[in-house]
Length: 162
Image (cartoon, rainbow, N blue to C red; front, side, top):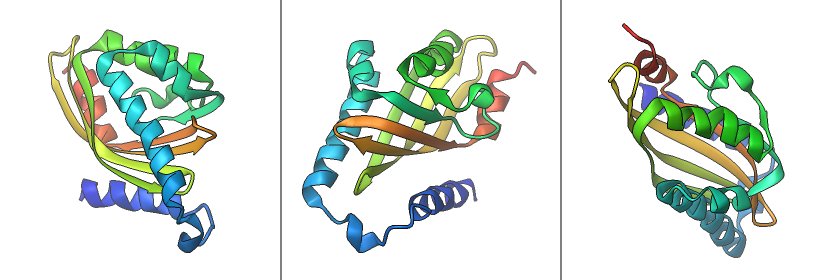
């Protein structure tokens, strides 16, 4: 049920752009934008903050899933806000946190990523294993927008002491 809900939300977000699907067909642009997103995930895996920062536009808008523990500061405007409000808090609160993209679906300036988050919350000792959908907008080789969809109930349960 959650998988279908997350995928439907991502599809609705992409379709809400209003452009006909045929207008998005540009293999070169799709490949370039997918490469930017792949580079972001590789930099996350390597803990390479400089590369992550270089892939994010100065006017970045980053939105965490509604109801999630890091949505309290939405929208995050600019890389600094994301590093401090999202990445910094997750790094402090989770051990072994990993973002694993499984599928990337490019379409024009959008790249939709399907994957999983895993890690262990330091305060509760509880394990997180939550699926996600990320909808990225890439402009001129930089990520300008990110919308997250995830199992926020699991996130809240994992970070909340019993």
